[in-house]
Amino acid sequence: MQKLNRTNYKEYNTYPEKILQFGEGNFLRGFVDWQVQVLNEKTDFNGSVVVVQPRGSDKIERLNRQDGLFTLYLQGLKGGIPVNEHRIIDSISRGIDLFTNYQDYLKLAASDELRFIISNTTEAGIVFDPFDRLEDRPQKSFPGKLTAFLYQRFLAFDGDINHGCIIIPCELIENNGGVLKEVVLKYAEHWNLDSEFIHWIHQANTFCSSLVDRIVPGYPTDSVKEKTAEIGFEDELMVVGEQYHLWVIEGPESLKQELPLNGTGLNTLIVDDLTPFRTRKVKILNGAHTAMTPVAYLSGLDTVEEAVNDFEVGSFIREMISEEIVPTLEGDLEELTLYAEDVLNRFANPFIKHYLMSISLNSISKFNTRNLPALLDYVAKKDTLPKRMVFTLSSLIYFYRGKRGEESIHLQDQPETIQFFQTVWQQYEDHLIGAKDLIEKVLSEQKLWEMNLASIPGLVDALCTNLLQIEQMGVRNALNELSETSIKKN
Ligand SMILES: NC(=O)c1ccc[n+]([C@@H]2O[C@H](COP(=O)([O-])OP(=O)(O)OC[C@H]3O[C@@H](n4cnc5c(N)ncnc54)[C@H](O)[C@@H]3O)[C@@H](O)[C@H]2O)c1
Ligand SMILES: O=P(O)(O)OC[C@@H](O)[C@@H](O)[C@H](O)[C@H](O)CO
Image (cartoon, rainbow, N blue to C red; front, side, top):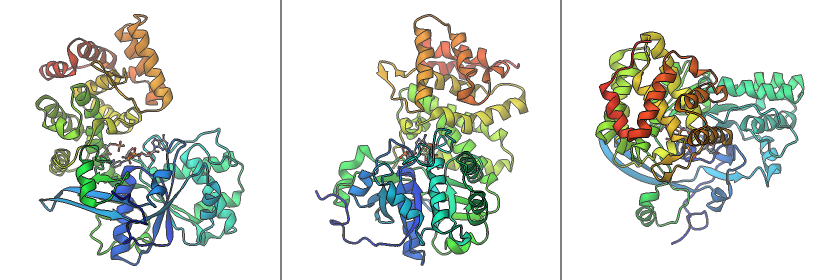
Protein backbone atom coordinates (compact mmCIF):
# COMPACT_ATOMS: atom_id res chain seq x y z
CA MET A 1 0.00 0.00 0.00
CA GLN A 2 1.31 3.45 -0.96
CA LYS A 3 1.92 6.00 1.76
CA LEU A 4 -0.09 9.21 1.64
CA ASN A 5 2.13 12.09 0.51
CA ARG A 6 2.34 14.58 -2.34
CA THR A 7 4.41 12.21 -4.49
CA ASN A 8 1.80 9.45 -4.38
CA TYR A 9 -1.32 11.61 -4.26
CA LYS A 10 -1.23 13.98 -7.21
CA GLU A 11 -4.55 15.79 -6.89
CA TYR A 12 -3.39 18.19 -4.23
CA ASN A 13 -3.44 21.99 -4.52
CA THR A 14 -0.94 24.50 -3.18
CA TYR A 15 -1.78 27.90 -1.72
CA PRO A 16 0.08 30.86 -0.22
CA GLU A 17 0.85 30.39 3.49
CA LYS A 18 -1.63 32.67 5.26
CA ILE A 19 -2.12 30.86 8.56
CA LEU A 20 0.24 29.87 11.37
CA GLN A 21 -1.24 27.09 13.50
CA PHE A 22 -0.04 26.15 16.98
CA GLY A 23 -0.99 22.50 17.29
CA GLU A 24 -0.81 19.44 15.10
CA GLY A 25 -3.58 17.64 17.01
CA ASN A 26 -6.64 15.83 15.73
CA PHE A 27 -9.08 18.58 16.53
CA LEU A 28 -7.38 21.36 14.59
CA ARG A 29 -6.94 19.09 11.60
CA GLY A 30 -10.56 17.86 11.68
CA PHE A 31 -12.00 21.33 12.21
CA VAL A 32 -9.85 24.33 11.26
CA ASP A 33 -7.81 22.74 8.47
CA TRP A 34 -10.99 21.21 7.02
CA GLN A 35 -12.63 24.67 7.08
CA VAL A 36 -9.63 26.18 5.30
CA GLN A 37 -10.00 23.48 2.65
CA VAL A 38 -13.69 24.40 2.22
CA LEU A 39 -12.78 28.11 1.98
CA ASN A 40 -10.18 27.32 -0.68
CA GLU A 41 -12.65 25.25 -2.67
CA LYS A 42 -15.61 27.61 -2.45
CA THR A 43 -14.12 31.11 -2.26
CA ASP A 44 -11.07 33.13 -3.27
CA PHE A 45 -9.50 32.71 0.21
CA ASN A 46 -6.52 30.97 -1.37
CA GLY A 47 -4.53 30.18 1.77
CA SER A 48 -2.67 27.35 3.44
CA VAL A 49 -1.61 26.55 6.98
CA VAL A 50 1.88 26.18 8.51
CA VAL A 51 1.84 24.04 11.65
CA VAL A 52 4.20 24.32 14.62
CA GLN A 53 4.30 22.38 17.88
CA PRO A 54 2.88 24.19 20.92
CA ARG A 55 5.06 22.28 23.39
CA GLY A 56 8.26 20.31 23.46
CA SER A 57 7.00 16.79 23.19
CA ASP A 58 5.09 17.16 19.95
CA LYS A 59 6.28 15.55 16.77
CA ILE A 60 6.11 17.46 13.55
CA GLU A 61 7.99 14.92 11.41
CA ARG A 62 4.89 12.75 10.96
CA LEU A 63 3.10 15.69 9.38
CA ASN A 64 6.02 16.46 7.08
CA ARG A 65 6.45 12.79 6.11
CA GLN A 66 2.95 13.08 4.59
CA ASP A 67 3.66 16.58 3.17
CA GLY A 68 0.82 17.89 5.36
CA LEU A 69 -1.80 15.63 3.74
CA PHE A 70 -4.28 13.59 5.79
CA THR A 71 -7.67 11.95 5.38
CA LEU A 72 -10.71 13.24 7.23
CA TYR A 73 -13.78 11.06 7.81
CA LEU A 74 -16.96 12.93 8.77
CA GLN A 75 -19.59 10.60 10.15
CA GLY A 76 -22.99 11.31 11.65
CA LEU A 77 -26.34 12.82 10.90
CA LYS A 78 -26.55 15.61 8.31
CA GLY A 79 -30.05 17.10 8.10
CA GLY A 80 -31.34 14.00 9.88
CA ILE A 81 -29.77 11.59 7.38
CA PRO A 82 -26.82 9.33 8.28
CA VAL A 83 -23.74 10.38 6.30
CA ASN A 84 -20.32 8.77 6.22
CA GLU A 85 -17.93 10.65 3.91
CA HIS A 86 -14.19 11.09 3.62
CA ARG A 87 -11.74 13.32 1.80
CA ILE A 88 -8.05 14.12 1.64
CA ILE A 89 -7.26 17.51 3.16
CA ASP A 90 -4.48 19.49 1.45
CA SER A 91 -4.71 22.81 3.30
CA ILE A 92 -1.56 22.25 5.41
CA SER A 93 1.52 23.22 3.44
CA ARG A 94 4.15 22.05 5.99
CA GLY A 95 5.11 21.73 9.61
CA ILE A 96 8.06 23.55 11.15
CA ASP A 97 9.90 21.72 13.92
CA LEU A 98 10.87 24.53 16.27
CA PHE A 99 13.71 22.51 17.79
CA THR A 100 15.49 21.82 14.53
CA ASN A 101 14.24 24.63 12.27
CA TYR A 102 13.70 27.69 14.39
CA GLN A 103 15.15 29.83 11.60
CA ASP A 104 12.19 28.89 9.34
CA TYR A 105 9.84 30.05 12.07
CA LEU A 106 11.57 33.41 12.21
CA LYS A 107 11.45 33.59 8.41
CA LEU A 108 7.70 32.95 8.45
CA ALA A 109 7.28 35.86 10.88
CA ALA A 110 8.59 38.12 8.12
CA SER A 111 6.16 36.81 5.50
CA ASP A 112 3.93 39.33 3.74
CA GLU A 113 1.27 36.71 3.07
CA LEU A 114 0.82 35.53 6.64
CA ARG A 115 -2.32 36.97 8.27
CA PHE A 116 -3.92 34.54 10.74
CA ILE A 117 -2.65 32.71 13.83
CA ILE A 118 -4.72 29.85 15.22
CA SER A 119 -4.10 27.70 18.28
CA ASN A 120 -5.47 24.78 20.24
CA THR A 121 -3.30 23.82 23.15
CA THR A 122 -5.98 22.42 25.54
CA GLU A 123 -7.08 24.33 28.62
CA ALA A 124 -3.56 23.89 30.00
CA GLY A 125 -1.76 25.68 27.14
CA ILE A 126 -2.35 29.43 27.59
CA VAL A 127 0.01 30.00 30.51
CA PHE A 128 2.89 32.29 31.46
CA ASP A 129 6.20 30.60 32.21
CA PRO A 130 8.60 33.03 33.92
CA PHE A 131 11.58 30.87 32.85
CA ASP A 132 10.92 31.37 29.14
CA ARG A 133 13.39 33.77 27.54
CA LEU A 134 13.26 35.60 24.21
CA GLU A 135 16.54 33.94 23.20
CA ASP A 136 15.19 30.39 23.73
CA ARG A 137 14.81 28.32 20.59
CA PRO A 138 12.03 27.63 21.23
CA GLN A 139 10.39 28.92 24.38
CA LYS A 140 8.64 26.27 26.46
CA SER A 141 5.14 27.74 26.59
CA PHE A 142 2.85 28.40 23.65
CA PRO A 143 2.32 32.11 24.52
CA GLY A 144 6.12 32.47 24.91
CA LYS A 145 6.61 31.09 21.39
CA LEU A 146 3.85 33.35 20.07
CA THR A 147 5.34 36.47 21.66
CA ALA A 148 8.75 35.69 20.16
CA PHE A 149 7.07 35.24 16.76
CA LEU A 150 5.14 38.52 17.00
CA TYR A 151 8.25 40.38 18.13
CA GLN A 152 10.17 39.07 15.14
CA ARG A 153 7.30 40.21 12.89
CA PHE A 154 7.28 43.64 14.53
CA LEU A 155 11.03 43.97 13.84
CA ALA A 156 10.78 42.58 10.30
CA PHE A 157 8.15 45.17 9.27
CA ASP A 158 9.56 48.01 11.31
CA GLY A 159 6.46 48.24 13.46
CA ASP A 160 4.17 48.76 10.45
CA ILE A 161 0.58 48.47 11.69
CA ASN A 162 -0.52 46.93 8.39
CA HIS A 163 1.46 43.80 9.13
CA GLY A 164 -0.20 42.63 12.32
CA CYS A 165 -2.13 39.37 12.62
CA ILE A 166 -5.60 38.15 13.43
CA ILE A 167 -5.15 35.71 16.29
CA ILE A 168 -7.92 33.18 16.93
CA PRO A 169 -7.34 30.78 19.83
CA CYS A 170 -9.66 27.74 20.04
CA GLU A 171 -8.85 26.66 23.60
CA LEU A 172 -11.99 26.06 25.64
CA ILE A 173 -11.31 28.73 28.22
CA GLU A 174 -13.37 31.80 28.86
CA ASN A 175 -12.29 34.90 26.91
CA ASN A 176 -9.48 32.90 25.26
CA GLY A 177 -8.52 35.81 22.98
CA GLY A 178 -8.30 38.31 25.84
CA VAL A 179 -6.39 35.91 28.08
CA LEU A 180 -3.89 35.07 25.34
CA LYS A 181 -3.32 38.77 24.63
CA GLU A 182 -2.71 39.43 28.34
CA VAL A 183 -0.09 36.68 28.52
CA VAL A 184 1.64 37.99 25.39
CA LEU A 185 1.75 41.47 26.97
CA LYS A 186 3.11 39.95 30.18
CA TYR A 187 5.97 38.38 28.21
CA ALA A 188 6.63 41.70 26.47
CA GLU A 189 7.03 43.33 29.86
CA HIS A 190 8.98 40.43 31.37
CA TRP A 191 11.43 40.49 28.46
CA ASN A 192 11.69 44.29 28.54
CA LEU A 193 10.62 44.61 24.92
CA ASP A 194 10.24 48.14 23.41
CA SER A 195 7.12 50.11 24.27
CA GLU A 196 6.60 50.49 20.48
CA PHE A 197 6.16 46.71 20.34
CA ILE A 198 3.45 46.87 23.01
CA HIS A 199 1.77 49.67 21.07
CA TRP A 200 2.01 47.53 17.90
CA ILE A 201 0.43 44.53 19.66
CA HIS A 202 -2.56 46.72 20.53
CA GLN A 203 -2.86 48.62 17.26
CA ALA A 204 -1.93 46.12 14.58
CA ASN A 205 -3.16 42.81 15.96
CA THR A 206 -6.63 41.53 16.75
CA PHE A 207 -7.08 38.81 19.34
CA CYS A 208 -10.50 37.22 18.71
CA SER A 209 -12.01 34.94 21.31
CA SER A 210 -13.62 31.92 19.74
CA LEU A 211 -15.73 28.91 20.61
CA VAL A 212 -15.37 25.65 18.73
CA ASP A 213 -17.74 22.71 18.57
CA ARG A 214 -17.21 19.43 16.75
CA ILE A 215 -16.59 16.02 18.29
CA VAL A 216 -13.32 14.77 16.82
CA PRO A 217 -12.29 11.43 18.32
CA GLY A 218 -9.20 11.33 16.13
CA TYR A 219 -7.36 8.34 14.71
CA PRO A 220 -9.74 5.40 14.04
CA THR A 221 -7.70 2.63 15.67
CA ASP A 222 -10.54 0.10 15.43
CA SER A 223 -11.46 0.57 11.77
CA VAL A 224 -8.15 1.66 10.31
CA LYS A 225 -7.81 -1.45 8.09
CA GLU A 226 -11.14 -0.91 6.30
CA LYS A 227 -10.53 2.80 6.01
CA THR A 228 -7.02 2.27 4.59
CA ALA A 229 -8.45 -0.09 1.98
CA GLU A 230 -11.15 2.45 1.17
CA ILE A 231 -8.80 5.40 0.63
CA GLY A 232 -6.03 3.37 -0.97
CA PHE A 233 -3.23 4.99 1.08
CA GLU A 234 -1.51 4.32 4.37
CA ASP A 235 -2.27 7.41 6.41
CA GLU A 236 -0.85 7.81 9.93
CA LEU A 237 -2.76 11.06 10.38
CA MET A 238 -6.24 9.87 9.50
CA VAL A 239 -8.90 11.68 11.56
CA VAL A 240 -12.53 10.90 12.27
CA GLY A 241 -15.03 13.54 13.34
CA GLU A 242 -18.76 14.03 13.47
CA GLN A 243 -20.72 15.92 10.79
CA TYR A 244 -21.89 18.64 13.20
CA HIS A 245 -19.70 21.74 13.51
CA LEU A 246 -19.99 25.25 14.91
CA TRP A 247 -17.30 27.93 15.21
CA VAL A 248 -18.30 31.21 16.86
CA ILE A 249 -15.69 33.94 16.52
CA GLU A 250 -15.95 37.19 18.46
CA GLY A 251 -14.51 39.70 16.04
CA PRO A 252 -14.88 43.03 14.27
CA GLU A 253 -17.10 43.50 11.19
CA SER A 254 -13.97 43.73 9.03
CA LEU A 255 -13.22 40.08 9.74
CA LYS A 256 -16.19 39.16 7.56
CA GLN A 257 -14.26 40.46 4.54
CA GLU A 258 -11.08 38.61 5.43
CA LEU A 259 -12.84 35.31 6.14
CA PRO A 260 -15.26 34.95 3.20
CA LEU A 261 -17.74 32.58 4.84
CA ASN A 262 -20.85 33.51 2.86
CA GLY A 263 -22.07 30.77 0.61
CA THR A 264 -19.61 28.20 1.95
CA GLY A 265 -22.19 26.32 4.04
CA LEU A 266 -19.80 26.57 6.99
CA ASN A 267 -21.53 27.00 10.34
CA THR A 268 -19.00 29.66 11.35
CA LEU A 269 -20.38 32.84 12.86
CA ILE A 270 -18.64 36.16 13.46
CA VAL A 271 -20.41 37.81 16.41
CA ASP A 272 -20.01 40.63 18.97
CA ASP A 273 -20.48 38.38 22.01
CA LEU A 274 -20.02 34.65 22.15
CA THR A 275 -20.79 34.28 25.87
CA PRO A 276 -24.19 32.56 25.55
CA PHE A 277 -22.86 30.04 23.00
CA ARG A 278 -19.86 29.31 25.15
CA THR A 279 -21.53 28.91 28.50
CA ARG A 280 -24.13 26.52 27.11
CA LYS A 281 -21.62 24.38 25.24
CA VAL A 282 -18.89 24.21 27.85
CA LYS A 283 -21.26 23.45 30.72
CA ILE A 284 -23.50 20.94 28.93
CA LEU A 285 -21.39 19.22 26.27
CA ASN A 286 -17.86 19.47 27.64
CA GLY A 287 -19.13 19.38 31.22
CA ALA A 288 -20.91 16.09 30.56
CA HIS A 289 -17.88 14.66 28.72
CA THR A 290 -15.46 15.48 31.51
CA ALA A 291 -17.90 14.47 34.25
CA MET A 292 -18.79 11.13 32.65
CA THR A 293 -15.20 10.11 31.95
CA PRO A 294 -14.05 8.86 35.38
CA VAL A 295 -17.51 7.50 36.26
CA ALA A 296 -17.96 5.56 33.02
CA TYR A 297 -14.34 4.45 32.69
CA LEU A 298 -14.23 3.12 36.24
CA SER A 299 -17.55 1.36 35.51
CA GLY A 300 -15.71 -0.63 32.86
CA LEU A 301 -16.80 1.37 29.79
CA ASP A 302 -14.47 2.78 27.16
CA THR A 303 -16.42 5.11 24.87
CA VAL A 304 -18.93 7.94 25.13
CA GLU A 305 -21.47 5.96 23.12
CA GLU A 306 -21.19 3.02 25.54
CA ALA A 307 -21.55 5.42 28.46
CA VAL A 308 -24.80 7.07 27.28
CA ASN A 309 -26.27 3.71 26.27
CA ASP A 310 -25.42 2.05 29.59
CA PHE A 311 -28.44 1.89 31.91
CA GLU A 312 -26.83 3.17 35.14
CA VAL A 313 -24.18 5.44 33.68
CA GLY A 314 -26.49 6.78 30.95
CA SER A 315 -29.19 7.68 33.51
CA PHE A 316 -26.55 9.30 35.70
CA ILE A 317 -25.37 11.49 32.79
CA ARG A 318 -28.88 12.47 31.68
CA GLU A 319 -29.97 13.34 35.23
CA MET A 320 -26.81 15.28 35.90
CA ILE A 321 -27.41 17.40 32.81
CA SER A 322 -31.11 17.99 33.40
CA GLU A 323 -31.09 18.36 37.19
CA GLU A 324 -27.69 19.81 38.00
CA ILE A 325 -26.28 21.57 34.92
CA VAL A 326 -29.25 23.06 33.04
CA PRO A 327 -30.70 24.67 36.22
CA THR A 328 -27.46 26.66 36.62
CA LEU A 329 -27.73 28.17 33.13
CA GLU A 330 -29.42 31.42 32.20
CA GLY A 331 -31.68 31.50 29.15
CA ASP A 332 -34.76 29.86 27.77
CA LEU A 333 -35.32 26.50 29.48
CA GLU A 334 -36.96 24.92 26.45
CA GLU A 335 -34.09 25.93 24.21
CA LEU A 336 -31.50 24.66 26.71
CA THR A 337 -33.36 21.38 27.04
CA LEU A 338 -33.41 20.96 23.26
CA TYR A 339 -29.68 21.69 23.08
CA ALA A 340 -29.06 19.10 25.82
CA GLU A 341 -31.08 16.52 23.87
CA ASP A 342 -29.08 17.27 20.70
CA VAL A 343 -25.86 16.81 22.65
CA LEU A 344 -27.02 13.44 24.02
CA ASN A 345 -27.90 12.36 20.47
CA ARG A 346 -24.45 13.43 19.28
CA PHE A 347 -22.90 11.40 22.11
CA ALA A 348 -24.85 8.35 20.92
CA ASN A 349 -23.57 8.72 17.30
CA PRO A 350 -23.07 5.06 16.34
CA PHE A 351 -20.41 5.90 13.73
CA ILE A 352 -18.05 7.38 16.25
CA LYS A 353 -15.87 5.73 18.84
CA HIS A 354 -14.97 8.59 21.16
CA TYR A 355 -12.69 7.09 23.77
CA LEU A 356 -13.09 8.24 27.34
CA MET A 357 -9.32 7.97 27.78
CA SER A 358 -8.79 10.60 25.07
CA ILE A 359 -11.22 12.93 26.84
CA SER A 360 -9.35 12.30 30.11
CA LEU A 361 -6.32 14.35 28.93
CA ASN A 362 -5.71 17.14 31.52
CA SER A 363 -8.91 16.20 33.39
CA ILE A 364 -8.11 18.29 36.44
CA SER A 365 -7.92 21.60 34.60
CA LYS A 366 -10.94 20.53 32.56
CA PHE A 367 -12.90 19.87 35.74
CA ASN A 368 -12.03 23.41 36.85
CA THR A 369 -13.30 25.07 33.70
CA ARG A 370 -16.13 22.73 32.74
CA ASN A 371 -17.63 21.33 35.97
CA LEU A 372 -16.59 23.39 38.95
CA PRO A 373 -18.44 26.58 37.87
CA ALA A 374 -21.70 24.61 37.56
CA LEU A 375 -21.09 22.92 40.92
CA LEU A 376 -20.49 26.30 42.61
CA ASP A 377 -23.51 27.91 40.88
CA TYR A 378 -25.67 25.00 41.97
CA VAL A 379 -24.57 25.38 45.59
CA ALA A 380 -25.18 29.13 45.45
CA LYS A 381 -28.65 28.72 43.93
CA LYS A 382 -29.96 25.70 45.83
CA ASP A 383 -27.96 25.84 49.05
CA THR A 384 -27.16 22.16 48.77
CA LEU A 385 -24.56 20.05 46.96
CA PRO A 386 -25.35 18.55 43.54
CA LYS A 387 -24.96 14.86 44.36
CA ARG A 388 -24.07 13.68 40.86
CA MET A 389 -21.39 16.29 40.33
CA VAL A 390 -19.99 15.48 43.74
CA PHE A 391 -19.96 11.82 42.72
CA THR A 392 -18.07 12.78 39.58
CA LEU A 393 -15.45 14.58 41.63
CA SER A 394 -15.13 11.52 43.89
CA SER A 395 -14.67 9.31 40.83
CA LEU A 396 -12.14 11.74 39.39
CA ILE A 397 -10.05 11.58 42.56
CA TYR A 398 -10.31 7.79 42.42
CA PHE A 399 -9.40 7.80 38.72
CA TYR A 400 -6.14 9.59 39.60
CA ARG A 401 -5.24 6.62 41.77
CA GLY A 402 -4.37 5.19 38.37
CA LYS A 403 -6.07 1.79 38.56
CA ARG A 404 -9.14 0.22 37.00
CA GLY A 405 -9.28 -3.10 38.83
CA GLU A 406 -6.03 -4.85 38.00
CA GLU A 407 -5.41 -2.63 34.99
CA SER A 408 -3.32 0.52 35.36
CA ILE A 409 -4.71 3.75 33.93
CA HIS A 410 -2.46 5.81 31.67
CA LEU A 411 -2.98 9.18 33.34
CA GLN A 412 -2.40 12.14 31.03
CA ASP A 413 -1.94 15.38 32.91
CA GLN A 414 0.73 17.81 34.05
CA PRO A 415 3.59 15.79 35.62
CA GLU A 416 3.24 17.65 38.92
CA THR A 417 -0.48 16.84 39.06
CA ILE A 418 0.14 13.13 38.47
CA GLN A 419 2.95 13.20 41.03
CA PHE A 420 0.73 14.86 43.63
CA PHE A 421 -1.97 12.18 43.31
CA GLN A 422 0.60 9.39 43.28
CA THR A 423 1.99 10.67 46.58
CA VAL A 424 -1.35 11.04 48.40
CA TRP A 425 -2.66 7.69 47.16
CA GLN A 426 0.58 6.01 48.20
CA GLN A 427 0.24 7.54 51.66
CA TYR A 428 -3.31 6.21 51.80
CA GLU A 429 -2.27 2.74 50.70
CA ASP A 430 0.52 2.74 53.29
CA HIS A 431 -2.10 3.63 55.94
CA LEU A 432 -0.26 6.86 56.74
CA ILE A 433 -3.45 8.83 56.08
CA GLY A 434 -7.14 7.94 56.04
CA ALA A 435 -9.80 8.66 53.41
CA LYS A 436 -10.81 11.97 55.01
CA ASP A 437 -7.19 13.17 55.18
CA LEU A 438 -6.73 12.20 51.57
CA ILE A 439 -9.83 14.16 50.51
CA GLU A 440 -8.77 17.16 52.59
CA LYS A 441 -5.28 17.12 51.10
CA VAL A 442 -6.69 16.94 47.57
CA LEU A 443 -9.34 19.61 48.04
CA SER A 444 -7.02 22.06 49.72
CA GLU A 445 -4.28 21.72 47.09
CA GLN A 446 -4.86 25.13 45.56
CA LYS A 447 -2.55 24.44 42.60
CA LEU A 448 -5.11 21.91 41.41
CA TRP A 449 -8.27 23.97 41.81
CA GLU A 450 -7.14 27.57 42.16
CA MET A 451 -9.30 27.71 45.31
CA ASN A 452 -9.67 25.73 48.50
CA LEU A 453 -12.46 23.30 47.68
CA ALA A 454 -12.44 22.05 51.26
CA SER A 455 -14.14 25.33 52.18
CA ILE A 456 -17.34 24.28 50.37
CA PRO A 457 -19.66 23.21 53.21
CA GLY A 458 -20.29 19.47 53.33
CA LEU A 459 -18.03 18.62 50.39
CA VAL A 460 -15.28 16.80 52.32
CA ASP A 461 -17.79 14.50 54.03
CA ALA A 462 -19.80 13.82 50.87
CA LEU A 463 -16.66 12.95 48.91
CA CYS A 464 -15.39 10.78 51.71
CA THR A 465 -18.64 8.77 51.78
CA ASN A 466 -18.53 8.30 48.00
CA LEU A 467 -14.86 7.39 47.97
CA LEU A 468 -15.26 4.69 50.58
CA GLN A 469 -18.25 3.27 48.70
CA ILE A 470 -16.35 3.30 45.42
CA GLU A 471 -13.48 1.52 47.09
CA GLN A 472 -15.69 -1.08 48.75
CA MET A 473 -18.24 -1.82 46.04
CA GLY A 474 -16.93 -0.30 42.81
CA VAL A 475 -18.26 2.69 40.91
CA ARG A 476 -21.24 0.96 39.35
CA ASN A 477 -22.68 -0.22 42.68
CA ALA A 478 -21.85 3.09 44.32
CA LEU A 479 -23.84 4.76 41.51
CA ASN A 480 -26.83 2.63 42.35
CA GLU A 481 -26.53 3.65 46.00
CA LEU A 482 -26.33 7.26 44.90
CA SER A 483 -29.59 7.14 43.00
CA GLU A 484 -31.28 6.05 46.25
CA THR A 485 -29.82 8.82 48.39
CA SER A 486 -29.91 12.56 48.59
CA ILE A 487 -27.24 14.76 50.10
CA LYS A 488 -28.38 16.38 53.32
CA LYS A 489 -28.87 20.18 53.26
CA ASN A 490 -25.80 21.90 54.61
N1 LIG B 1 -11.31 16.37 19.91
C1 LIG B 1 -12.42 17.06 20.04
O1 LIG B 1 -13.55 16.56 19.91
C2 LIG B 1 -12.34 18.52 20.35
C3 LIG B 1 -13.40 19.34 20.03
C4 LIG B 1 -13.37 20.66 20.42
C5 LIG B 1 -12.29 21.13 21.11
N2 LIG B 1 -11.26 20.30 21.37
C6 LIG B 1 -10.11 20.84 22.06
O2 LIG B 1 -8.94 20.21 21.64
C7 LIG B 1 -8.12 19.84 22.74
C8 LIG B 1 -7.56 18.46 22.48
O3 LIG B 1 -7.14 18.40 21.16
P1 LIG B 1 -7.25 17.14 20.25
O4 LIG B 1 -8.54 16.46 20.39
O5 LIG B 1 -6.80 17.61 18.95
O6 LIG B 1 -6.19 16.21 20.97
P2 LIG B 1 -4.71 15.90 20.51
O7 LIG B 1 -4.15 15.07 21.60
O8 LIG B 1 -4.71 15.38 19.13
O9 LIG B 1 -4.00 17.31 20.50
C9 LIG B 1 -3.77 18.00 21.68
C10 LIG B 1 -2.95 19.21 21.34
O10 LIG B 1 -2.83 20.02 22.50
C11 LIG B 1 -1.44 20.20 22.79
N3 LIG B 1 -1.24 20.27 24.25
C12 LIG B 1 -1.63 19.36 25.18
N4 LIG B 1 -1.26 19.79 26.42
C13 LIG B 1 -0.62 20.98 26.22
C14 LIG B 1 0.01 21.91 27.08
N5 LIG B 1 0.06 21.71 28.40
N6 LIG B 1 0.58 23.03 26.52
C15 LIG B 1 0.54 23.24 25.20
N7 LIG B 1 -0.04 22.39 24.34
C16 LIG B 1 -0.62 21.28 24.84
C17 LIG B 1 -0.75 19.02 22.19
O11 LIG B 1 0.55 19.33 22.01
C18 LIG B 1 -1.53 18.85 20.89
O12 LIG B 1 -1.10 19.76 19.92
C19 LIG B 1 -9.03 19.84 23.92
O13 LIG B 1 -8.44 20.36 25.06
C20 LIG B 1 -10.21 20.68 23.50
O14 LIG B 1 -10.05 21.93 24.11
C21 LIG B 1 -11.25 19.03 21.00
O1 LIG C 1 -10.93 17.65 23.46
P1 LIG C 1 -10.80 17.64 24.92
O2 LIG C 1 -9.96 16.50 25.35
O3 LIG C 1 -10.43 18.90 25.56
O4 LIG C 1 -12.25 17.41 25.49
C1 LIG C 1 -13.01 16.34 25.15
C2 LIG C 1 -14.34 16.77 24.66
O5 LIG C 1 -15.11 17.34 25.68
C3 LIG C 1 -14.27 17.76 23.54
O6 LIG C 1 -13.28 17.40 22.67
C4 LIG C 1 -15.59 17.83 22.80
O7 LIG C 1 -15.77 16.68 22.04
C5 LIG C 1 -15.61 19.01 21.90
O8 LIG C 1 -15.37 20.17 22.62
C6 LIG C 1 -16.87 19.11 21.09
O9 LIG C 1 -16.88 20.31 20.40
